[in-house]
Every structure is written in structure tokens, then in C-alpha cells.
Image (cartoon, rainbow, N blue to C red; front, side, top):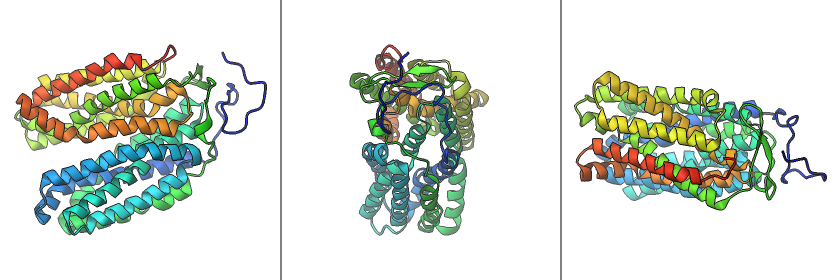
Amino acid sequence: MTQPPTTGASVGQARLVSPGTAFTAVPGLSRAVAVLSVTEIVSWGVLFYAFPVLASSISADEDWPMVSLVAAFTVALVVSGACGIWVGTRIDHVGPRAIMTAGSMLAVMAVLALATAPTLSWFFGAWVLAGAAMSATLYAPAFAAVTGWSGDDARRRVRSLTAITLIAGLASTVFAPLTAFLLVHLGWRDTYLVLAGVLLVTVPLHAWGLRPPWTPTSSRSRGTPLEQHDERGAPAEIEHFDVRAFSLLVVAMAMAGFAVYAVVINFMPLLTDNGLTTGQAATALGLGGVGQVVGRVFYGPAFARLRPTARASATVVGVVVTSGALAVWQSPFVLVCLLSFASGMVRGIFTLIQATAVVDRWGVGDIGHRNGILTGAITVVSAFAPWMGAVLAAVLGSYDATFAVLAGLAAASLLVLPRARRTGA
């Protein structure tokens, strides 16, 4: 085990942590986690899940082609992935409070711009703003914040991440029906205006709640392996950062992430094309959301004893199995519901694998920047999942074959993932 340095290290320099100091309380962390739980469900609900509910009405009312509306939303996700690297770097240096508060303000402006868009080009521009806002308000900055505050205590980190993602995982459950209700009574423009008002609450919440002391993570773990503690409280040595291993990790997680999100996005057409009613398909999809929450609860106790690469590999195997099974069986309905639940569990666990993949291998140093790259890559490739699903279905002749391809893509990521580590991962 690495011994503590003989000379003092200033705050923000690479340092070693003894078991006695790894679990010190972080003032204000509980409040920050509670705030992020609220702001994440609102931000995801307004910026992400409201659009699929409103898209058809927007197209019908404005006579804007649906393909153009989807393209605007896709552009927002690409912008989010690209901006996430800069956002993560700034969080490393100054912490999440100013960045996420500014991101919330930008998000409100973007939604107001959507609501008042007089032309399709204006609508596109509003989604560009929304994409930048997403990069500073959705999971990536929240994960970087919690990881930085938790430092070397993996148990505290996983507990906090699980709490945030459990609540945020209900965003579609809350905001899809709320948006549909508002749409019926107000129309799509006024619905977005109301949602902008709801989103406005995240500005003071971020300003008030994200106040735990912040040690710049940009200078941690430079050149010296750190000691951190895993979910069981046991010492776990963190290795020198390896650019090649990190690059391979990004490739593997992007491949698996595309499969994960393409499955859920193309789930409804898979089932309806194979004879299930829209109601049945929606019920099965809803059970997948329940499975997602269960998977996040299951993550801590089930994966604590596994090393990072083993955790990721086990999760991706779950993606392969569930996606492959859905490619083969779209009936009976009970079996489809069980498969959707299992697929949702895998998806929920994958979110936490994504949140911890970097810090579990290389510690908290530059976590915002590195996690921004990883999350950005997954976001960008996943942005094209709706189109790619439709294209594959058209080329291959069915969504059954599309899901088989997605299972194969996830399996291919398993060939890359073991190389994205060094001996300790």
C-alpha cells in the first residue's frame, strides 16, 4: 500500500488519504444531493422528455416537418455532448455551483425561445441553446459534483449517485403525463411557457444548494497514485492515468451506450410491428422504467465486490442478453413485460456504471473533464439512435433484426472493454 507523503501537500495537490480520513463528513453534501435530485428530475423532464410528447402537435400546428423537429432535438444532444467537455473542465476548477446555476438560467431562456419560435430556424437555434444548457444541468455535471465532493469515499459517492438517479429516473413518469395534460388544455407554446416556469425553480435551488466546500479536482492525482476506498470501505489503489486505456474505455462505453439507448428508443416500434397494441407496448415500456429504478437500487449491494471492468462487463452482458432476447421474442405479452423490466434494470445499472467508470479507475483527478469526454461521447452517438434504428429496420427489413444488430454491437464492446484497463481495474 502506498505510504503517506513525508511533506505536506496543499489543498488541491495530489494527496494520499488514510482510512481514518476517507470518511469525514462533507458539510452540506446531503443538502446538495437533495437539491440535485429535484433539479435533475425537473431538468430532464422539461429539456428532454417534454419534446417527444409535444413534437406531433408542433409539427401539425406549425406545418414543420417531423424529420426537421427530430433533427433539431438531435442537434441539441450533439451540442450537449460537445459542450460537456468544457463544462466538466470548468467544474474541475471552480466547482459546480456557478456552472449549474448559469446552465439553469440558460435552460429557462432556451425553453422560452422554443415557446415563442416564429420560424423553424428560430426553433433550431433555441435547441442549440437548450443543448448547451443540457451540458450544464443534466447528469454529467451532477455526477462530477457528487464525485468531487465525495472524494475518496466510494460508498458515499455511490449512495449519493444512486439517490440522484433514482429520483431523476422518474422524470418521464412525472413529466410525460404532465406535459400531455398541459398540451390538451393550453397548446404546445403555452405548455412550454408553463414548463419554463417550472424550470425556473432550478436556478435558486442550484445557487442555494450547491455550496459544499470544493477542492479543485483539476490538480488531484497528478503523477502519484492515490488511495481511495471502495464501496465496502476497503483500501483501493488508484492508478496513474492512462490515455490509451481511457480512450478505449470511451470507445467501449459509447458502443454499449448506443445499444442501451437505441433499444429503449426503438422499443415501441419493435412491439407494435410484431402485433402488440400501442397500449400493450406502452405498458411494457413503463415496466422498463420501473426496472430502471430497481436496477439502480440493486447496483450497490450487487456490484460492490467487483472490480470496475468486471462491473461494466457484467452490465454489458446484460445488454447483450436482453436485447438479443427481445430480437427473438415479442410475445407472449407477459414475457415481453419481463424482458422489458430486465432491460430497464440493465439500463439503470449502466447509468451508474457510466457515472463511476472513470473515478473507479483513475480517481477524482480531472473528473469533470474526463467524465465530460465519456458522457459526451455516449450522448453524441445516442443522439442518432432514433434515425439509426429506423434506417437499420428499413435496410434489414424488421426491428427484430435491428435489435439483433444492437445486441451484436454491445457484444463487440466487450472485446474493447477489457483492454480499457490496467492491472488494477
